[in-house]
Image (cartoon, rainbow, N blue to C red; front, side):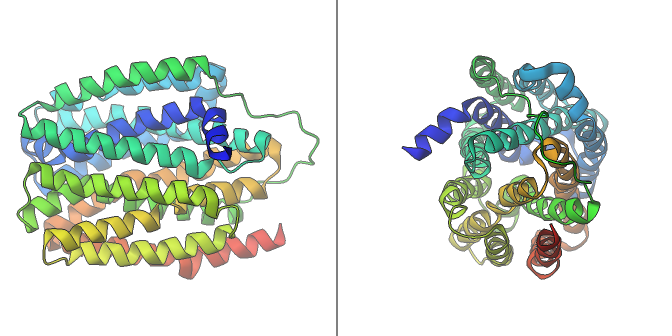
Length: 383
C-alpha cells in the first residue's frame, strides 16, 4: 500500500522520469546504427558527445530560472521540447550535424532532469517519504523497455528517426499525466533559519552523482558496441547490454525504496560503489556473452542507488528553503558525469580498446567509497 501511495503521490514526476528514460534508452540501443549513419570513429563519436555536453551543462545551471518562469507546468513543457529535440539525431548525416543534434537533445534532457529532481525533493519534504529511488527506478524501467524496443527496431530495419518519433508519441501521452498532476513548487515560506550552501557539502555529493551517472551513461552508450565488437553479438543481443543495465537498475532502485528506510545513505552508497566497480570489471573482461550480461547486471544493481541516495542525503542536510537550490547545484556537478562518460569511453576505446574503458569506469567508482563518502560524512557530522 505504501509503495502504491508513493507512486500516486509522485505520478507527475514519474511521467517525466519515464520520458527521459525513453530517449536515452532508445539512444543506447541505436548507438551502433547512429555511429555508422554519421560515419564517425570511436574518438570522433566521443568528441561529438563531448561538444553536446558543454551546452547541456550550461542549460542545467540555468534550469532553476527556467523552472521559475514555467512554474508548475515546467515538466510537460520541457518534455515536449525533449521530444522535438530528439528527432534531430535521427536526421543527422555527418559529425557536425550529429553533434548539434545531440546538443539540442542533451540541453532539453538536462534541464528536465534538474527540474524533476528538484520537484521530487520538494515532494519528499512535503510527504516525509523517500521518493528519489522510486522515480529513478521508473526512469530505469522506461530506459530498459526503450533499449530493447530500439534493438528490435534495428533488427526490423527501422531508421533511428522512426524510433525517436515513436518515443515522441509516447512522450505526448505522458505529458497528459504531467499536466494533470502538476508538481508543486518548492516551499519557500518555511521558518527554518537560513544556512549557507557550502561547496564543502555540495561538491562531495555532486561528485558521487557525477561518478554514478558517468558509469551509468558510459555503459548505456557503449555496452552494445562492446558486445557486438568484442563478443560477436547481433543487434538484438547487443541491445540487451543496456537493457539489462536498465532492468537491474530498476530492481536496485525499487529495492532502495525499502533499503533507504533501514540503512544510512553512506552505507548504501559505499556498498553500491564496490558492487558496481566489480560488475564493470566483470563485463570488461568477460570471455562470453553470458558473463558480460552478468557483469552489466551487477554494475546496474550497484550503481542504481548511488545517485538517488546522494540526492536524498544532501537534501536532508540543508534547510527546506534551500533544498531546491542545493539539488540544482549538485545536479549541475552530477550530470556532468552523464555527459563526460561516453566521450571518455570513446577516447579510451580509440587508443586502448573498450575493456580498458570499462576498467577506467571501475577505478572511478572506487573513488566514491574511499574518498567522497568519508568527506560528505564528515560534513554531515558537522551539520
